[in-house]
Image (cartoon, rainbow, N blue to C red; front, side, top):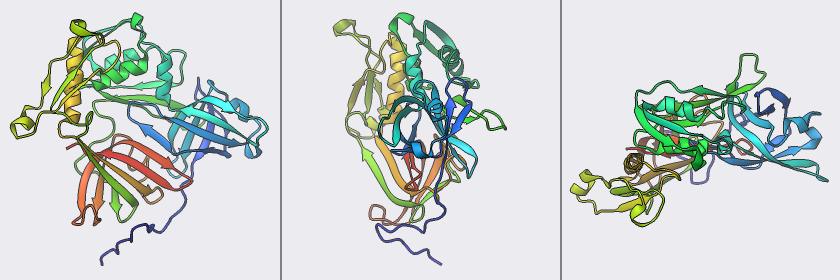
Length: 374
C-alpha cells in the first residue's frame, strides 16, 4: 500500500507533545538547586559544534519555587533541560542576565557553556608533535580549575599537531580550541551535558574531543522522511564568496611584507576537470604567528569549500522525528529520504551530518541543519 502524500502545508497526525523538564543548578558544582516548572525558553533551544549559542527565558513567578532566586542567579547558575521520555539532559546554559520588577515574571539570558571559555585564557602553550587530544586538554587546564563541572572526554586520536600560544597574546580558551578545530586534520569538539550519577542530583559537562564528533555512517538508522516527520525542507547550495573556492590562502595579522601567509592550497583535481579558479583568502584567528599553522587552516578550509556548500534545513514534528539524544546527537550522520517534492520530483535519499539543531518544545518543532559532505 502506498503512503498518500501530504498536500503542501498539511501536517502529519500529531502524537504526544514534546515536553522538557527544567532545572536550576549551581554552576560550580552542577548540583540541582530547584526544579523550574514555570521556566520557558523564548526561542528554540539551539546547539552548534564548537561554538556557543545564546537564548532568552521567561520564568513565571506564580509557578516558581521558593528558591527560584538562588536557582537563577546570574554568573552562579546553570539551566538544564531534560527529556523525560529518554531521561537524558539535552541542553545546558549558564545564566548571564536576570531582569524583573513589577511584572509577574523575570527574564533570563543564558548561553551554552562554550561561552564560558571566552572568559578564561590559555596562558603560554607550546606543543610540538603532540596528540591533538592532549593539546585540547592542555588548553582546558584553566577552565578545569575553579570553573563549571567540566570533565574531559578526550581519548588519544593518534594525530600529532603543533600549536604555540603566548600568554601576552590574550588568547581565550574558546579561540584556541576553535583554532585547533580549524586546522587541517584538527579535532572537532563540543560541550555536552550529562547526569553526574545515577542519583540524578546534578549534572556534569563533558568536553568531548574527537577526530569527528558523533557517529558517522554511510547507513545511519535515524531517518528524516518527507512526507512523514518532515513538514518542510530546503536544500541550500552555494558557491558564493566564502562558501566555495578552488584556491585558499590563510593570512596572519599585519600589513604589507611583514604579514605572514600560508602557501596557496589548490584543488588541482577540480581545476584540471574544468572548474574556473576561485580564490579565497582569510585570517583564521588572532595571534596565529606560525606559517605552518596558517597552512593547516588553509587545507582545512579548502576541504570544506572546494565543491561549495550543500546544506539541508529540515523542519520536522519533534515528537514524530528520530528522538534527539537517543536516536541521534550533534555530529551524527542521519538519512534524509524525500519521496517526492517540487524540488525532487523523482525523490532523493542522502546522508548528511548534523552540524547544529534547534528544538522548540512548545511548537513540537525540531529543525536540524544537515551538511552534505560528499
